[in-house]
Length: 496
Length: 132
Image (cartoon, rainbow over all chains, first blue to last red; front, side, top):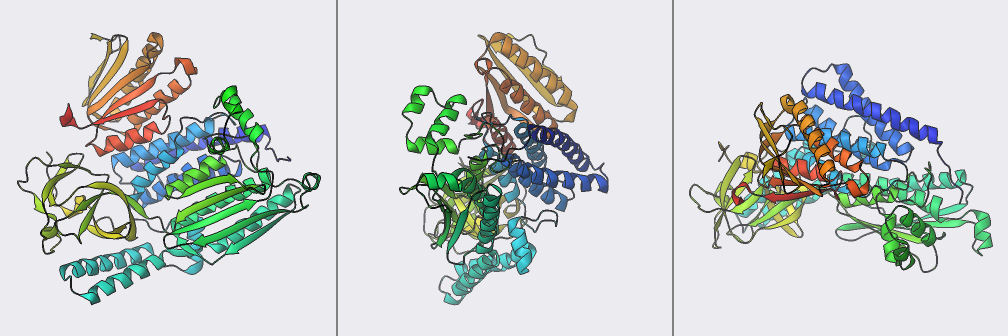
């Protein structure tokens, strides 16, 4: 298989300049948070992070690119607060720089076992989820922001104001359970808010299809790319994730999958390879299937590489199942190539793809096709503004609370001084049983009367309100719940 | 339990006490670690690492439960420590077990992020302060 290999010297130069860049980023961040930075320092910081993101993707360090992207998000959020950020945010930014440094230093093709890229991104997302998501600066033009700019979308601030209105309508509908008009008004508002955040998916698919065709030409391959499916709209963050996933998956299909024309003819295949991208949707999710008619999984190559990396012993490799081989393809740092390739990077691409898709709570499945070639199925939610919460029932079966898991909940030993959740929401009480819980974070603790068992779940944020708002309406599966932000819902406490 | 030949820290709102018990090293932090303690923590962790390698321990326990906060520059010292362990030959590597207070959100967040650097080397045991 023909590959475009980056000169070793170029990769070494990338490592050296990136490490210097990360040092500058760290120093500039420290200066900004200590209020001793100049505007030039700030400009250089954003330039360095943005350049790191771009260069790392260019030389195949997709994992570094992902960290740089999230670091950029953190910096934009911090800039909006004039760098007056909580100390634990400072820790996450510092650790993101360290994480990127560790990934830059890793040797090409070396095992990256033990590094949990997906988990680290999730930690950053947890920090970001507590900040309002507003449009980013012009320097950071993600797939979604580009799509939003094309369509002149409504600003995040406007969406939050609409979210406040929708929340009020929903609470009013609970206060007057018989009012069908209020319920209908809530449903209309919620539906419109969901649409405000949606962007078209197919232009992105077509753009990547064209990119894959260009790549095939560069590699001396002949490939037809067929796009099937309906015009779909997805949430902006889903679009960003699919941008990364499509980029790597299509590049892999063209670079690793489809064979050069002479090889295909020798194997009795049509001279031109075929890659199909199929887009489908159901009520809650989008499914993108990318199929190629190429060589399929290189079982021997995967086994050989797994043994050399110490991931499998010889005897394990000999009996490894197809499913096990597929799992190896997603292993951190795994590549069937020894050398760095400009096309599919260091072989970390599929690890980065899985991390990106799982971050938006999607799944990726790779499987050989019976007729030859490979099939990759990406299943993602239509929108992914999610938050991990404790689901807390109240004494009314139609009123459920959601409390962010950044707070811990335990059963209180006494209900003295406890607030009633429904009373605080100015809602009529119910007949259900009441128990008292303590909601805790650091030195803050609030007692609340609720009802029923508590469970940890993921809620969908369809009607975002600003972080200083005490409540917001979310959905848990098909159930509507009231997200309570304890820091603004309760009066401040002086600590335990 | 005997005190390890590693100096403790007791200054600037931070107390850190390394101890050795039956060939195992345990490190306990209390108070707050800010930039004033940065150099002391660097030095302490470096000494603990050298001692862990010398003794060939399989795990070092780090108790954060009485710790109110560790700032970013001090936390960086733990990342550096982890990298030094990763740089050891596989057979010489040891694990870090962090004891954390689950009611302190910063510990959950910071230690959770730290574990992502090397999930095979970091273990977190979360307990509430009242559970002790």
